Structures are given as structure tokens and as C-alpha cells.
Length: 139
Image (tube, rainbow, N blue to C red; front, top):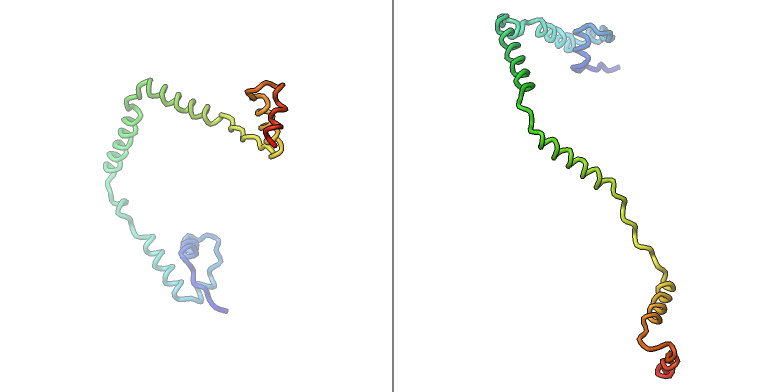
């Protein structure tokens, strides 16, 4: 069976002692054991932030609190800006709620021909009594 080396997550879990069963892997693999020891040594070294004096942290905390306070006390926007923004949102909502236009109705070719005949009959210039005359000229 081939040994799989521990990845970064496996090494982190082993270094913190989180219920990972890596004991056999560390006993059998020198590479994993060396990597785990190096990671443990680096974790135990003091950080640069640990050497900073207390007054530094107090000053930094005060600066952050003052910046937060200034942003909260920022000059409020004029009332008209809020009114215009609300009107824009309302207009967008009304436009979004408009019904979709209906598609034009499809007319069959027979209905179209009937419609043209009716239209031609209604919009005829000559009187109805002279309608048979068209038959004479059509021949």
C-alpha cells in the first residue's frame, strides 16, 4: 500500500490535535513528521504584534473608534435627494409592473380575403344598384 503524504489541512489538524487519525502516517513517514515539527516550531515563535506596547493598542483602538464616530456623524443628505431616489424607485416599479403588450391576432387567409371583400363592398363609390354593371365589365 502506497503512503499518501499529508496535505496542509491534514498537517494543521495534526498540529492542533484535532481528531485526525494520522499517527501511523507520521510514524511511517519522515517527510510528514519533519513538516509537522517545522509547522509546530513556527507556530510557537512569538509574533511581531506580541512585542508591541499596550499604549500602541490603546491609541489604535481610539483611532478606530473616532473614525467610526465621524462616519456616523457625517452630514446627512438633503431631503430632496431621498425624495428623488424614492420617486425613481417608484417609477421603476410602475414600469416593471406594466402588462406585456398583446401580440397581434393571427388571421387566417380565408378571413383576410373575407375582410377585404367586405371592406371593398362597404367602401364602394358607386351605388349598390349599379353593382351588376361590374359583372359586365369584368367579362
